[in-house]
Amino acid sequence: MLSKVYSFGISSLDAYPITIEVDVSPGLPGTVIVGLPDSAIKESKERVRTAIRNSGYQYKPQRVTINLSPANIPKEGPSFDLAIALGYLAATGQIENQRLAQYVFLGELSLDGKIMPVTGALSVALSISSQQFAGLILPRANAPEAAVTDSIPVYPVQTLKEVIDFLSETEPIAAFKVDTASLFQKTNHYTIDFSDVKGQSHVKRGMEIAASGGHNCLLLGPPGSGKTMLAKRLPTILPDMTLEESLEITKIHSVMGLIPPQVSLLTTRPFRSPHHTSSDIALVGGGSIPKPGEITLSHHGVLFLDELPEFGRSVLESLRQPLEDHCVTVVRANRSARFPAKFMLVASMNPCPCGYLTDQRRKCQCSSTQVQRYMGKISGPLLDRIDIHLEVPALKPLELMQQHHAEASSEIKKRTVAARGIQQRRFKEAGIFANAQMGQRQIKQFCILEKDGQDLLKVAIEELKLSARAHDKILKVARTIADLDGLEKISPQHIAEAIGYRNLDRSW
Image 1 (cartoon, one colour):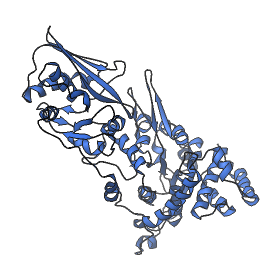
Image 2: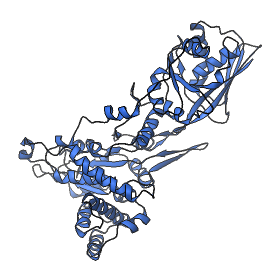
Image 3: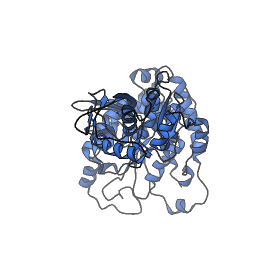
Image 4: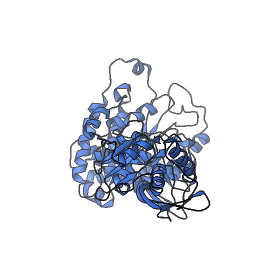
């Protein structure tokens, strides 16, 4: 007897429908799973057989053939266990199969029949058509994230027996509901604040500009000057995420299995800080079955690379294309994947190998050759793609001892939100949301300079030997500074301040 059950698989970040066909026939006992299953799926026959028996049903020694359609797409993960078990029970006549076709099933089975959580539940919920299916049946632990979309009812379950009782209409299950508006009010807050940072007014100004325009920035200073502390507080002055942005990053983290327990929606901007020993695949994404890396997990948030020169050369160079295109395409022999990567890059580094070249209290022990070799680890093309370079000096004793509180993140955030609002209105027809994303057409249209500004920029290009990309970065940063001042025109003062944030440029 043949039965059909419906589920969804994950490819890259998107879900696609899978039809699970189960055929039970006389013959040599055994279970065969076809349709390009991975090891976790091949092992599901053991989990399914034991779970069915421990749930009070029979698994007879017969010939069982399970087909995962479409057969030409590799399948992975244990999320088909529940659907396979239901398909077997329907094929053997132990349950009615009339309602099976109305629902999508996700879930890993434990040996005692309990249903364990899986990854990618939100991606599946977003992909299901309510016109084709009556609901999504999935593990209770995955219900909060899947229910944030109201496109289809979500039914949480804990055991195989509970699913069977629901399908036979002997035990109803209420659809899981989530109030997304209240989620933002309860969880959209941070435990750190810019008021914790003493001094460093120049650096805070630069980071405010970076947050206002979505610019990448580099923090250069001796150990203990507060580079990491400042970087961690950058998300606190970024504009609040929209529901669309929250769904995007929740979907990414759901596919990677990084959603915390009982969390429905990620409402704060991601802050990712990979170790400098990370590989290029860990950072950019990849693998035989392409998976997103740290830059995609930083989507709509901040990617912080501490001790930038300690990262491998190939790792740093792999950032160049995503920084320009705001996405990364991973190509393999039999498949390709495109991952979003709209992130702000914040990097930090010491000015020399010992770290004390710019520290007035301690003497640097490095030779000029060592300093040059150390700085040369950051290639010119990568440095070109970082809009703002900020020197973070070591704090003086009086600054460390001061008791008054610095400006809070909430006050800085008001200015960044106002500047971003100007940019959203400006670019509403262009499909971008920040000055850092401007292309050549937008630069020509919105970064017009008067003669004084043009002359100043020309001198800077000649003296600093700036590249064409650095020229564009200065115009973008100047546009952001003007937006913070609420001005339509870019003045020479704005250009001068933007040039001041390119102090690490050098000829290559």
